[in-house]
Length: 485
Image 1 (cartoon, helix red, strand yellow):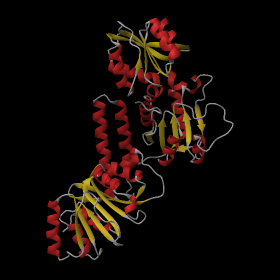
Image 2 (tube, helix red, strand yellow):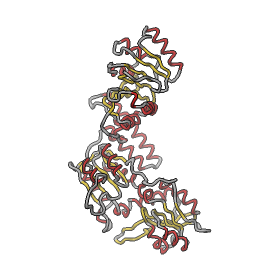
Image 3 (spheres, helix red, strand yellow):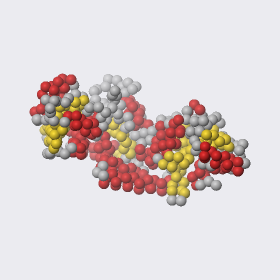
């Protein structure tokens, strides 16, 4: 009566109480649970009348009208959950299943003892991720084969542990390593991700291509730890720590107990929220742009992220001015974005020259002169800004542009000395706006956060290219601390 996936769902039902079949398909699963003796009562629900009518015929044919309750309901909205031990949601997309769970009020059911049996037809990675965000956990996961198709079935329960899944975790799943079908599923996913990587490479999207190649590698072989000192040495080759400004504090600022990492979180800043996210994702290392320890500390308070890092045994490696100065660092990424979005008339030249072949920021010459408002719109796209502040000097168009990530308003005079029409940076103070207006230079304030957060995908790329076995995640909480109205 049941296909392979529904048979497995039936097998996983605990039988401790009432089972609910959400989105019932002719009530076949409900009939199997009752006729096998596993459940004394089953609730079969659907959002449409048609499937419920088909379910009614099945129930009548099997003579189990007194043991199967049919309910017209959108998800679990109208389903009574008292006495329910199992909820089965099968044959829907992962996003739809997650939406049904999210809309179900926790106080309506016994979260500790309720068992969710979930069979997504698509987006299983999304469902896995959301399960943990709903403060649940996956206790079992299986793959069922039906013809040439592999179907994932998850068993989830409530959890008191705070854990979030990384992108890789959500793709990899929770199959037993000895599960042949689970391993075959991962191999298929590895092949799919490799094809995505190849298509991204052909489209010229190098960062994304490297990321999907690394995901493909880990799907096949799993994630494995790397010595943090090895990560440090590699980053030192690309962004030498010796080049940092004298007042800076870049380096490995917090160590962990093992000196190893298999999950790394990237963030512009190590805030308390980012440190907690890294802990919930079971990360061993956070790599940030701004140093988590800058000024000498006389005390560490309970909301200090340094305390959280030590308490959760999470290492912190910070790259500040050395990342800004390096050719492929923060300003190097901005230069590449300019090259992708504008036709440049000449080779870029250093903005502020620091000696020893080092420079901070770049100057580019646009092939076509551009109005300030038009340039501002393109800068919004480059930096992902919601807003940009700029002064539109009357009658001026822009060709020669200087830029420096972070807070570069003090470099206005250098841009004037180098005959620039515009300066692109962040954190511009009022006196700089006045000087720029008087001197006929257009200044674009794209925000400190946005002009530096742009480097995180590049950091992920270089790490995944060198260490594809590392699980590298850009922090979801690496966000602009400001809100705009």
